[in-house]
Length: 379
Image (cartoon, rainbow, N blue to C red; front, side, top):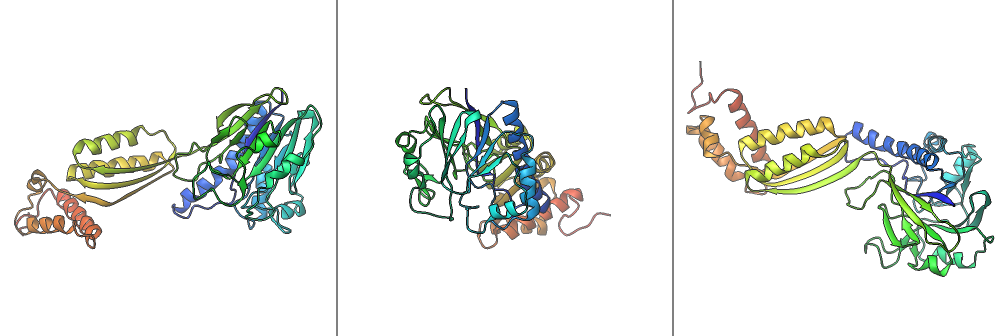
């Protein structure tokens, strides 16, 4: 029974400017590791071929070293690879693909589908119909030609394309590089392997997006997978099995804290989060001094556990309770300063500065054991 692996959107060369440099480097490196995992999966699952549905590279301008590393990472699987240009690495007259060939970096078992064509892999029982992008954007459906492409009898017909299935994706995606939602049926395809949508998505029983094998965005779109596809014979429906490839989960939480148990629940979820992950938190509401200290401690622990933890607390007011202020012995002038800073947090133009000042002041008072009272210093 023919079996192949469907993957797409490797985006090699992507850089993560929003992160600290060491995190950005690790996230970029994980994309090479994903290729190695794909190759190993193809070997362990005894796949006949690996089909890559576009955007192998994030840009045409990646370095020669990066090009060589991509093909080196594929080495574990010695069967045929079919690689399709997408919108980020379109098959221009001069492209990353022509450079790869000049570098003699493309192994003999790798087929670059740089032109519309049918690649017959008879030993694997597959006929791959390719619709490469030869420019970044097109407003015509390049898969329409699949209907006129003939393939040998007995071979499984697989379409390989990169674009947006019309009417079924988000509005901001559903535009350039269109693909008809019923293309598999109209072109007599047993399976249509798509790239461009970065999450795992089934369009119909014969049409799938594999998504990117290593997540790179805070979207709940089931990214980080590769698909193993089994088709017993031409005309039979495919059996599609997702396999996890990604190293890092990307988790984004927006939390509004009102009462103490809100913070407790958040910190419990953070403590239970499986490592390693890329975590983005935005906190609003208010927290008392004890909660602030617990939050900072938990964030510190999480930063050492996960690949990246970013927490925006600019919308989180620090609100010392009367008991907090009493424990700090912050009566008299200091008490007035704390009260003023608490009020200033409510003003949008002073919120962050006031919060930071209040945090620093209360931290100093804690460290001094509440020595700063009514302007007197302890001996």
